[in-house]
Every structure is written in structure tokens, then in C-alpha cells.
Image 1 (cartoon, rainbow, N blue to C red):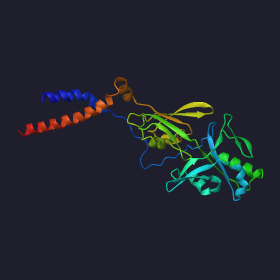
Image 2 (tube, one colour):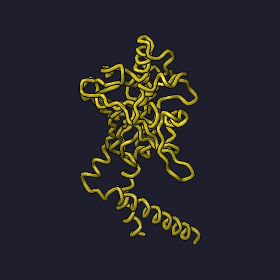
Image 3 (tube, rainbow, N blue to C red):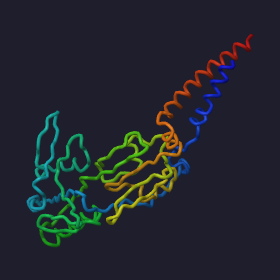
Length: 288
């Protein structure tokens, strides 16, 4: 009996450390079955270094041919076989690509690299300053230019950012860089693709590093609050870096011994076993 008490006393500090409360819930202050207005809109602008895909379509295909690069090529997969096709001859392939169906179409399309001045060289229309525009405003601008200058009567412009990437590092299960197939991604979606935060991640102070107007801006978003839905960092932008900082417990454990979390887990298991045996002994003693 004395040995059992000694073991329990030795395991008590580890049990207290392991059982320390940590807030791990998202949007914890948002009432369930409630409605939250989202006032934050996704309006990411194009920046130097972005690669933008631009395709012009019309009821008269011959009128838009000069505005579509000949290098728009897609690799389509049919029954396990791979063929190369020129996109200008297959509008259905283009539609599938723009919907992000990469299991059917593997992207190998060229786009326009926005240079350091924020400009691209577009066929016929020439030099265009596009940095600072959203994808929607760029579409409207090109359509208006084509119509007002008499090149195409009914142009329909489609754009897509080809190098839309965000990076998630820190206290997540699988830190990595995410290639975004769609037009937007929320911070929760990015975390989900990384296996979510570990229990040691700080949820009320997530750091987002973003490039704005040629400067690196360091922002913070509280994922435990419903106000996260209205944060400018709820929707991630191209080249955003999301950093999940470790909490004080993880830092303390790391400073002392990187194997301590494993030891704590082992200690909890041993404590459960000891406690089980202890109860059995007490029960037997009581029966006597």
C-alpha cells in the first residue's frame, strides 16, 4: 500500500500538467443556432509577381483568337491515358479547368506574369497596369476595352489566379504550402487542409503575414471569437503566411525537454493502470 501511495505522489505533478485546461474551441463565444452577419468581403487585389490567366470568349470565336495565347494547353486524362489539347478548340475543357476539376484536367496553362511595375503585356491592347485591380475589375476593364475599341462586340473575359498559394506553419498537424484551386479560401479551410491545430496552438492570436502596398503587414485574428468572421484575415490572400504560435505550456515543455509530452502521456497511462489496481485492492480489502 505504501508503494502505491508513493507512485501516485510521483505521478501527481505530471497528471496536473497533463490535465491543465486549454481553450481549444473555435468561435467559442458565438451562441449556437445563431446568425452572424459577415461584413468582411473578399476583395483581394492583384500584385506584382501574380500570374493571371485571361481567356476571352465570344459568339464569334474568330474575333477573339488574337487575344488568347497559343500556349494555353491542358493535359486531359481519359481512361488513364494522357493527351495534350489546345484549349482554344475545347471550351468544355476550359470550363472544367476554371471550376478547379484537377482530377480530370491537370493544369499546364500559361498566364500573364505581373511585373514589378504592376503591368502585363496583353495581345493587341498592349501594356496594361493591373496591380491593384481585383479579378472582377480586370475582367470588366478588358471587356470594356475590347468593345469600345471595336475589336469584339460581345466579349466575355474569364480570369483566374494561377499561383494562388498560402502557407501554414507552426502548431498544425501538417504544416505546408497550399495551392488554392478556387478563387478564395478562408483561414478555417486552410487549417483543415493542414490537419487542424494541435492542442498546443494559440487559437485567440493567430498571426497572418500579408503583403500590402509593397510592405509586409503582420495581422492577428482571434479564432475563438465570432468576430473572426469579420476580420480582414478571415479570407486569405495570395502568398499569405499563417503562423500558429505555440502556447506557454508547449514552450515550457520544449525548454525543459522535448520528450516531456511523451513522458506525460506515458505517465497518465501508468497512473490509470495504478489507479485500477489500487481500486481492486481496496475492494478486496473491504470484502474481507
